[in-house]
Length: 319
View 1 (cartoon, rainbow, N blue to C red):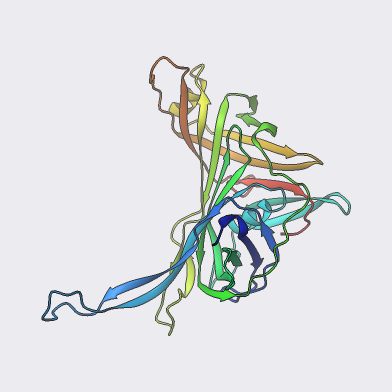
View 2: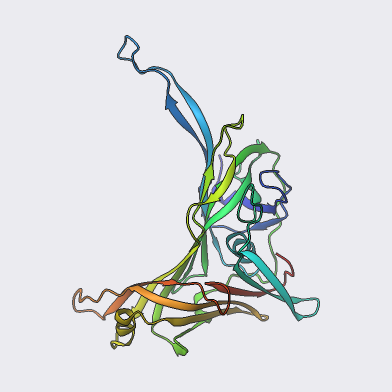
């Protein structure tokens, strides 16, 4: 009998894409669906029978996602993987550091992958070991702030290869003991604090794809961008006046700025300098209180040289 609760996920930063390394950091997760699939292709059609003929296998594709809580240490690995660029500073000598994550204008390796690759170990409570996925890059990061919930991160993964390895021993971050959560989040829109936002999610999409080649292998040959990095927002806002609806119609750019804190000075601060609404659908569904489910996008700012700046204050000094 195997149980999901007895598994774990770990990762380690690769110095060369696809070259597996030992896992260095483990994190708590809610679920995962990372898997290896094999492409298939037909090799014959006219076969003098109504039975399905043989086919053959093609490219191995490693992909999937995991959902994890926003622990003040673990979340930094997700931000590093999606944003690529990280610069740190000391808050309290020897105990607390601030890391700013911004979009890097340079690729991790122009020949192989635009962003930091990881080796991931996924243990699924079997006696025969764990699955090691190599050459993993983070394609998407969806972060959600919702009532009665910890900050949640869904990470979309693209990998290069997989192996069965001996199961390692997981050691999870111990300080702090819990994740960032909804009740310590405060927001500012257009330079003014607001208590009208009832839920909020932000998605960073790197628009990556695995590219195969004729290279004597069934593994993908490289990771490439198929579009720009995109930062989008969605959420629910209390509808009490036409201020934000007017901002939508006028396509007014606003700075969105929100901070989530935890005990002992941990913080997660998101700064989007140029945000415009892309959808603000007014409706009256019935007798109940009116809200609006909005969508928005964040554009690149020449002033900050990024579309999004995410600052993490935690006990880890280097991501």
